[in-house]
Length: 347
Image 1 (cartoon, rainbow, N blue to C red):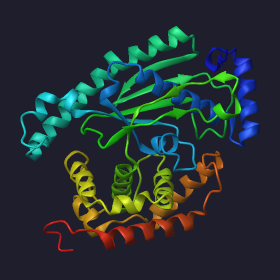
Image 2 (tube, helix red, strand yellow):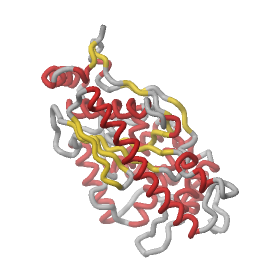
Image 3 (cartoon, one colour):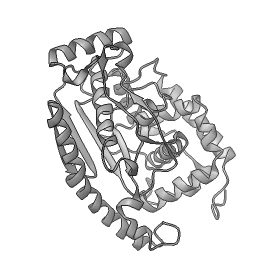
């Protein structure tokens, strides 16, 4: 009978991770955090609200689809808007806010409901799991639609990756299209005698993740600067890997999906460019997509990419930064050439 990895003593877990690191070539502190990421998803999977959650973002690309060769440390989740705000959705013809004032009211209401749900339902769920399994970890719900799980790390890297699992929740979409995918820990193939956490969450399809990332990158490029503390280089790397896997071509060919993501961003995640004008996401996916920044923004992006590479987050050979930028420029050119112009865009 296999022994549970998380039931081992700290010394034995450290020994196991050191062995897995030597066999895999991956840093021990990243293998350890990966275990905690999968464990967190397994805890959510055993909850009453599992059916209403969709796992998305870079970590889903790495863990569920294996299309990116980098360590992705945080968990992005969508809690179905129809579950948390069914009363609001039912009042509209198509499930979308019908006016700007209605969108603002929805956003304020949903944010309050989401933070309350995290504090009253999600945090206690993890506190109970930690206590039941005797883990050396603590939970905090600092607001901002997030939950932190801090654990006592057995090893450390450069400090770029913290011994904390960050779960970030959104609730202004359905998260669809999505499907169930099986997840295992990166260390599992090297520790067959141990039972490591496994999970089977509902996962956003990677074509939608492509457009989620592409529109976010477009906004960053139009703004010419990045939010303080944001680990942003990963998005560009992920986009290139999605292109390598052929998923970018599938996403580019799905004009309806592109417009759906753009409309959602337009309604709920409005941003302004460097001149103070509203960023038009529908125009972006309709032939005006920008994926390679220049000037100071490009320099800041290069610095963040160097830090990401330096802490071992790229598991294979990291492409040079300028090659990454060239690839992203080529992806935007391909998307723009294939795009169906938004009505009234003049493109």
